[in-house]
Image (cartoon, rainbow, N blue to C red):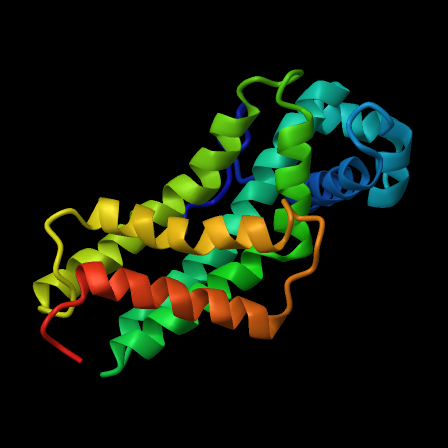
Length: 218
């Protein structure tokens, strides 16, 4: 793994500085999610991170810059969870339907998680103030997720398990079959959707998906 380097000297950055920056970003996202952007203050973020207020400014500058970085960091964490789910398709076994249903349910579980929900809510709430926020968050979440899923679907197509000449479109439609009903069932994130209901959504999504893209294999 390539070490993180300082901009000035090219030397490895001190571990403590990296950890402190991450603690600030985690605290900032928690406070922004709890208070909203307008009501959040840097002092509260510093206290939550366990650092002095000037330390926050030294690491991340003003509140606007802090918000942007906190949102990007949270999006990366959500993406890491989603990529771990898609990675499970490498060891899918013989039952493709079961593997896809498991993948769909796990993706919905991430979607319903506290971090992902707060990320969506903050993005929607701050679009007028930060017009580029949707592009940043979507690029780091749904964009990368679609690419990873398309790669899995391309391999399944090569193996004759799926029938598609456009894995990217198949991935986009698979995700739409999951997120569309979830948005409706959760009432745009204001209602909790339990595990049984998530499994039902995933099962229905896979039924429809395989009608369109199912291959010759089981």
